[in-house]
Image (tube, rainbow, N blue to C red):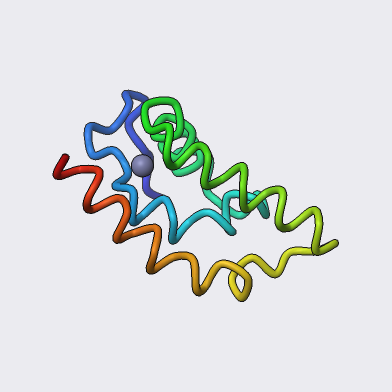
Length: 88
Ligand SMILES: [Zn+2]
C-alpha cells in the first residue's frame, strides 16, 4: 500500500544495522530497497565489505545458513572494532 519514493534515501545504513541485516541479505530476505542500501554501504565501507565476505565464506564452509549462531560471538567484537575505527 505504501509506495516508496524512487530517489535513494539519505538515511544510509549504519555499520551496526548492516551487521544485523547480513544474514537477511545473504538469504535474499531483504526488501529491494533495503538490499540496495545494504550494497551501497558495502561500496563505501571496506570493513563491512570484508565482514560480509567473511560471513559468506563461513556459511559456505558450514554448508548452510547458520550465520546467526556462527557470527554471534564475532558481532560484539566487530562492533567494538567499528566504534574504534569511526573514532580514529
Ligand atoms: Zn560499515
